[in-house]
Length: 48
Image (cartoon, rainbow, N blue to C red; front, side):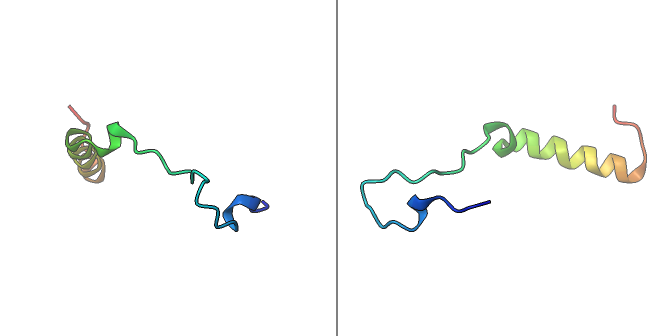
């Protein structure tokens, strides 16, 4: 895939695209739940 032309330009007026933060994945509760589900899967226990 070709690189866009605006990446090489040093134009300070351009707004650079930024990756959006997913609030669900960044939440502490979601991380804890995901970690617990992975541990249960490794133990091959059904999640409750």
